Length: 140
Image 1 (tube, helix red, strand yellow):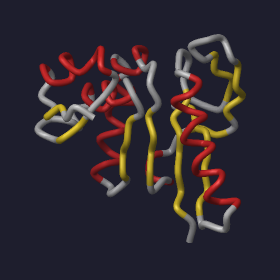
Image 2 (cartoon, rainbow, N blue to C red; image 1 turned 90 degrees about the horizontal axis):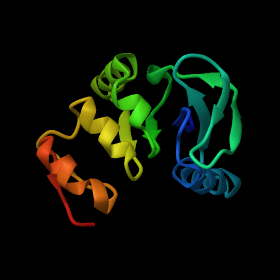
Image 3 (cartoon, helix red, strand yellow; image 1 turned 135 degrees about the vertical axis):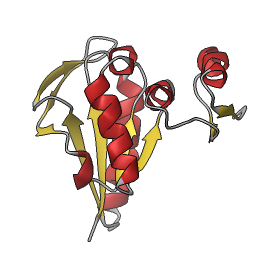
Image 4 (cartoon, one colour; image 1 turned 120 degrees about the horizontal axis):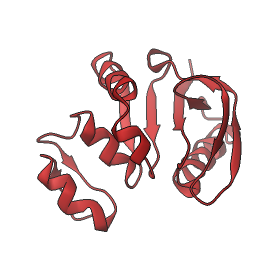
């Protein structure tokens, strides 16, 4: 059974924070690794407009229980106040899904309460905020 990776896409997502992991897992799959990577959108399939204006069609709605790993890319100011997404992240982690953030995507995990007392890091300009929210910030 392949490793099922979902990358959560949304309006304002940082292009490199989403496509970088997609590229890495895509190369792993091409090399014969059992990896299946899917771009997902919380509400429903559709188009997202990234931070720098890139438009990406996201073919799949997010179902957290259908992943082994959920990646939340940075740029997620919209997600920080989305109680449905935050609840789904908690539900995913409770179900055994590995939940990871890239750059300021970690701030979304923090808003969901998933970094409290845990080692974590984020973009250097958000480290103080992450620490103030209860994360054990590692300078990495």
